[in-house]
Image (cartoon, each protein chain N blue to C red):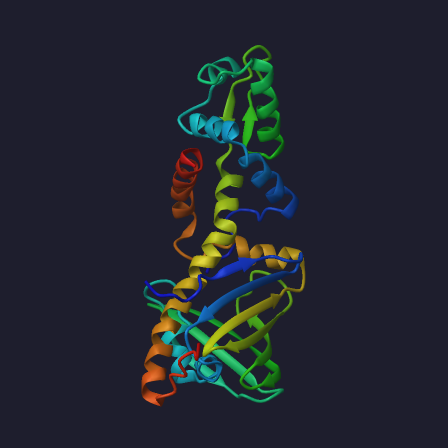
Length: 125
Length: 162
């Protein structure tokens, strides 16, 4: 375990992240942005959606801190902000995996203990 | 594959982490495995390469415990005091890391419930503040930040595929 190398997310931010990820169009937009910045028009292209509809999804992603928009007033290219997503991903799963590895070792130890103590206590069903 | 339950981790309140896991063994054995140093050294380890060379337990209310993990020259110590012991069903103990990355101490409550020879472990860790809880959850425990960024790609791929 090491000191933090990025600021922990507040639960509000985390809620916003998970809410933003709950929509398939928004996940597809993030996937597209993982390979580079894109304008609204470029993002709208593969979807059967109007630019205003895409813009609405982009606002949700932007509020969740998952993307940022460029300053260029016309194009305003979108780019992925990886840190909140990585942190959200890491949030519970890294912790869970860390403990699950321990508990799997405990499973093996308990099996061994059951054999040596003869205290199997099979369920009587 | 084993039929034991997968570990679930939840955050029911702002200051808590709750873990629940089923073990295919009666609870007196689970209790022993959680309170006897020679047994703890077998399973309470960190990521690959870490061992638990120091594990001292004074198993009584008010008694202290101390764990030191080691990998190469790096050591990480942690300890606290047992506040409540009701073998084989309940342990309450404080928890402070030597180089804590959050202030204050956490309180761990372990509850073991047995049914048909199986034991459900519920471990509740109550932190002094939400910031402390979140710092623990967000600290990379496995293989650091680089790996978490690798997993970003996996997450995106799986989310899109779903």
